[in-house]
Amino acid sequence: MAPHAASPARPARISVRVNGRLHEAEVEPRTLLSDFLRHELGLTGTKVGCEHGACGACTVQLDGEPVRACLTFAIQVDQAHITTIEGLEATELKLAFHQHHALQCGFCTAGFLLTLDAYLAEHPEPTEDELKVALAGNLCRCTGYAPIIQAVLNR
Image (cartoon, rainbow, N blue to C red; front, top):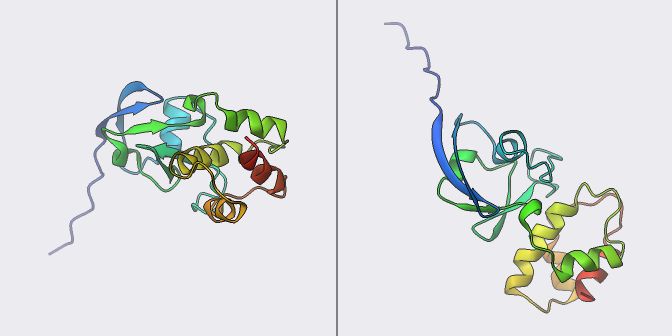
């Protein structure tokens, strides 16, 4: 008996609230959240760096928790709340990043801000060492991290 050919996966219908706005869409099961946000919703602030979850550039908040959009399938966020850099409110953290020159090229900035926003919600007065641990999953090739740490500590 001949083996059956694999049947193609069918698109799935999702309903997700992104930056407070409800979106309903049909997505292929293999569609990454980063691709959905960038290509379907036009939210290009979510950057795709390594596509392995190591750099943190694609970090978004899923129900308030930072996640890697390049490792998350769009179908996994059905009925969830997503916050991208476009939806992150103007905060003292954003201002501090500007004042302390905590960004240069800006590619990694969204991931840092969304990671820190979630972390600071639970740890409002972190030490320098705690911040280093919290940011261990975010890579920056421009700043050397010192201005990022100073921005958070002096916000």
